Image (cartoon, rainbow, N blue to C red; front, side, top):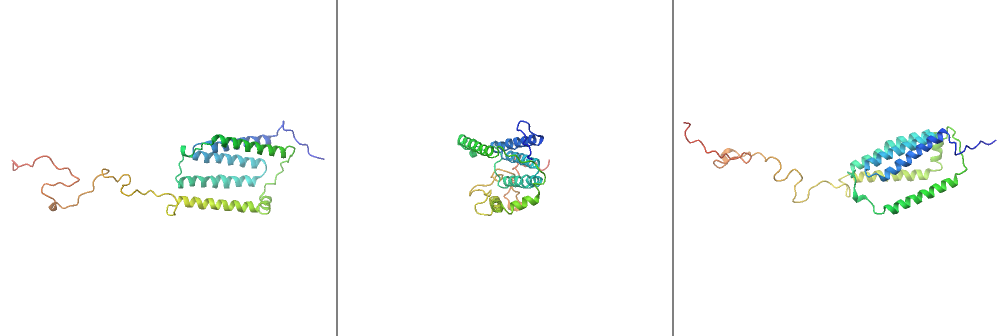
Length: 232
C-alpha cells in the first residue's frame, strides 16, 4: 500500500511555512546584492541565513539548523564585519565600485535562475518525500559528510583558511602589501601640526639672556610706555 501524494493545490501548514521562509530567504538575498551599504548587506545576509535555518527546522534537520545559526550567523557574518572594520573598507555608497555591465549581469542572473528552476522542477516534479523526524541528526550527517562528501569538505576548509590568511594580511600594516600606513609625505606635516596651529611652545630663555625690553615669544610686547615719573 503506497502513501497518497498530496496535491499542490492544498498545501499543508509545514509547506506554507517553508514557502514563506523561502520567500524571505530569496528577498533578503536579493537585498544583499542590491543594497549600496556594505554593513546593510551583511545584516541582510543574517536574515537570509536565519530563513535558511528555519527551513532546515521545517525539514526536521535540527542539527543543520543550529549549525547554520552558530557557524554562519554567529561566525561568518561577524568575521565579515570585523574584516570591514580592520581593512577600513568604505561602508557607504561608492561610485567607483559600480559596474557598467548591469544589464549583462542581470540577463546572466535571470538566465541562470531560469535554468536552475527548470532543472529542479523537471527532475523533482513527481517526487515526494515525507518529513520523518530523525533524518537531520548528527550521526547521519557526520557519516554522510566524512564518507561521501569528505573531499568537498576539505576543499572548503582550505578555502576558508586562505580567506582568513588574506584578511590578516590586509589588516596588518607591517607586512609588505598590507594596509597602507597613515604616514605623511616628505616636506609635509600631519594634520594639526602646521605652522599656525596650536599655541606656540613656551620660551624657557632666562631674562638675563634676552635683549633689553624684549618680551617672550608667547607674550605680546607691551605698547604702553614705561612710567618715568618716579612714582609721583
